[in-house]
Image (cartoon, rainbow, N blue to C red; front, side, top):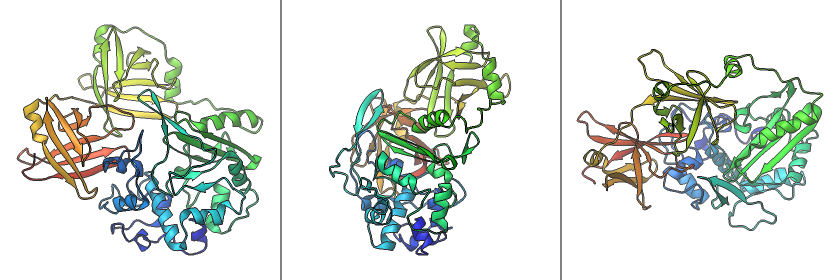
Amino acid sequence: MAILLDQGKISPDDDIRRYVPEMHKFDPPVRIRHMIRCRSGIWAQWHIAQLAGWYAEPTETPYTQNDLLTLLSGQKTLPFEPGSQFSYSTCDYFLMGIIVERVTGLSLADFAKKNLFEPLGMSSTFIMEAPAQIVKRRAVGYQQTNGQWHQWTQSSAGPGGRGLYTCVDDLYRWDQNFYDNRLSSGRCFSEFITEGTLLGNRNVLDAKPTGTYRGVKRIQFTGGMPGYVSAMTQFPDQQFTVICLCNNSTIAPWQINSRIADLYLAKELEPVQKKNDSEAVRRAQDKEVELDEAKLRNKTGAFRLRADGRIWKTVFRDGQLMVIDHLNKATPLIPMGRDRFQPVGGFFHETARFEFTRTSPESPFSLTSRWNGGTVRMDRVDLVEPGSAQLTDYEGQFLSHELAATYRFRVADGKLLLRVNNLGWVPLDPTVQDQFVPGIRQNHDNRVFTFKRNQQNQVTEMFVKLWRVKGVSFAKRRNTK
């Protein structure tokens, strides 16, 4: 895109419909700069494909570039005004790949080969257009799902938002071009060479978006997909770069790169500053304490994650407080204070702490999980257990014109079941009033189904969300069960 911008063949202010008229006419329009900065609001590829009835993990449903474009062209509403919020979406880059093809008359793979890879001698780097193609020395990705390992290979075509194959030797050649550019030059490409961004989009390319690390300039590129994750961290003033490619999605390569830089650039980096904030103070004051059963039981209940609607629980079991995540995995909580606990074992970071807070002695607790680099906030909720008669309120067919998908709900053996298009029936579990989640808990399936009622208390609509895709509406068809 930087090359086409510098050549004047496209403009950051162009409406994407100038090149992709299949997309809906949004008002205000989605512009190229919005896609480059992931501020368009266009659906995220992995998540919307799953909501349309295509599998994503651990086995991917094959689909073509045209299939995905047709799916995206159905989107009629955006979650926010273009440009107003950051929301990462690989479909922004998928659409930009289509724009490159339509402006240049070349496939994205051929354009990249001619203008990027061949001039730099990157002979083992290419954009995959035929997922079934045999690739010599190809590394297979490994994805862990519910404690079991699976191989993951790409089986669908979506160039632009995915499909780049490379190796460390070629990335070294790419890295050296930052110091002696042999490619097309212009304002946008120069920004990329000097800052590692395009239109200032650092949040898009970097898992830890910052321009410095311990006082020195840093440019970092991160990426991944199921079974694969990678990071390339440059320190341009020292002409030092760390490249880490992994075919195990549980690894965080940007952390490995930082540790390597700590060793090799020890004399160049500023000393690690100890955080003088409330969280650091609280952790320093942590000391295991004993709480009686009443104080522990007082903190039991259900909590809903504000970010995505998943439900976690705290229970008193075997003489101790435990947290149960959305996959029904239980982890003991050791009290480090009256309202502060440390999870022991499980997948939690060693710095993780759970804090219970409330606005008054009579109000319910809210729950916050903090760890080195993250915070998750949860609100206390009351779970419901509707009987078969109440579940019949949700029976029927619900249609999304945006997704061109039909969701069918029916009650059997006291459970609400869901069928998406022509797939099999799956059980759902109730959470709060008029809300359900998949009964079979899996890492890759965190859908939340919320039903809406009219003034007559009749269910008329259903909304589904999955990670970054939220608020997709399904209208209930009349007289259908």
